[in-house]
Length: 204
Image (tube, rainbow, N blue to C red):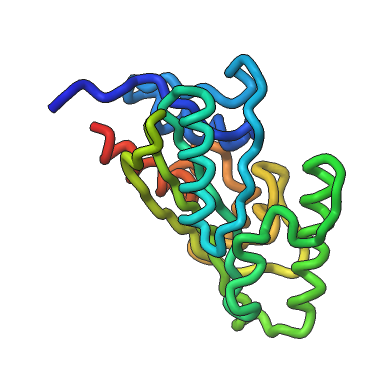
């Protein structure tokens, strides 16, 4: 088998995502860089697919072509069963609020809690989903994976680690939220960690 390409561009400027992916791929000998490490201007593609898989594919292909680098992209979010899978692909902009990440995360969490206010605890099942796509500069798809991280949405945020909806997803078997897990344990269990490990298997 040919030696895999060791440099991979992760299509993000989010340092949390970069840390999670590097924690899995770095020890395997892959050099993972972010969009902030690539010189020049690379327009953000329009993520207009109606699935996580579709949006990951759009990003991977477009950034691979524009940077001439093998590119790994993900689309992730929270699916809540009582909301018929919402916020889903709209997770990052669920509340429609601009501003920095902290402002958006706070508004998104507030909207989710309001939407679930009358839903009993036993019906608040949910999961984080992460779909990944790896593309080469010619636009060809190298591999695609999907990871999940199941739990239930609690009524009051808890924990300081992570980002997004992490303080709201409670993991019953662990007795804590995703945001209360130390980074190494979250990486071992999370949807992004799951998808990244599956991607690593495809690359070796």
